[in-house]
Image 1: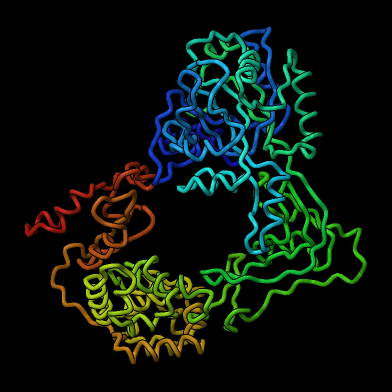
Image 2: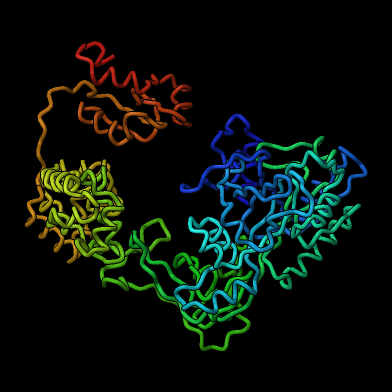
Length: 630
């Protein structure tokens, strides 16, 4: 639906269509590790439709080209699309769709699929397209052999993952199957219709799509779609729709394609399958950001080929809007046949024993205070030492915007945590060189550099430390304002709500967030440990006689090549200027990078000077007084 909305907007405003728009790309990526294959004939995706009225519109467009148009309706197999190439009847190469133009060479994995013929009944050169999948019964049998925590979520993901294994032995152990549904290229045969080509494929040994319904009227197309929809639960393979294709191949050529999709076909998407079950409980999980997410614990039920026993309820407001009570009979579905969701409660089936869900007031992981973020539906734990938040807290603390500890990225932090060398922020400052060196084969030099970076970070200015603590509502700019006002972290930690709200650009929400953060026992413990580690907690005033941007206000827009926006902003503030997020008549300059948006347009309409990154560099590097202030 969002894609349809995007298409409608781009149709109305074609001047804003970007080459990076999702409408201009075929879904999928090329995985590193496989040889790349450039498809001789692109493997395009299909245009989705969600109602029969849209199928009717498609038919009207086709009949403008040929009033006697006929169709073939097929099941849209829920799997991974591949191309198979044969030379003189011998299977020589197979590739995934990838991005439609370039895929991955997965020939060895495809050879493990028994329904892919290694040799055809005719010595012909041909490229065909098919869908690799795992049947419902095979999927259930495979999962039955596994422990609960090892079970696979759904057959489609398992099929895709199996086909993209670098070790073909793993693919051979999985019950992969395939249906062929199209001739991509065959110069030796002159097919006139799609239906005719499919019959030929079956004749020479291919396992073709088993549901193929020729239709010469729109009514028959509708009947075929309804028939597939009614029988989809009885099929032994998963489908995610029905495909309506123009049968005449010459007419297809005349109708043509877009870069992404053929104009002569659409994929009808059925409404999600719904099942009734019991909402046994609602429990809260704590995410990496500290957000508490209510999770529905369900009586297990099979929906669209997957056994569903739990699903997210997003937030407290969602639970209230759906009027969900613990013990309710509920309707669930898989949105887009992928993501499980609770559709609604069935209040008419209540017995009186159902219970209201109450959001916890303390974190179920660390016992820290839980707050509802003002103006949002998010409830968060604000304990800075909460184990559930530790990875995210440490990553932010060490990031460029935080303490800027070069070399201490997320992957290294994960390794250190996995090995038990760190479990919270302060452990960073007690890391040993040999611990870090153990992460890499020749890790001595890396460890030396990282230890130096950690020690250097102890001398960072106060605003970096404030930002690194990850206080809700406090970013780079607010951290600088608070550092200049209070001079020490100790003074900031003792500041009252009233004192904080008197500061320009610090509103009630930010003030409350700062106050609540420093009242936590976990915060007090953290600051004590950081102080003991020798981390600077005092503002180091920088003497700067160069105020070339004094009285100037800059707005940054677009992507800069040399700087991030934060880095450019720091330079502007260093020279006495201000950075604003919105363009107004008071704006002095708009610094515009690549893909600048509405701010650039507004600046041009107001006649505000727009400078490039190169012009900005001249302004900050020049010793010429006139150029500095031009």
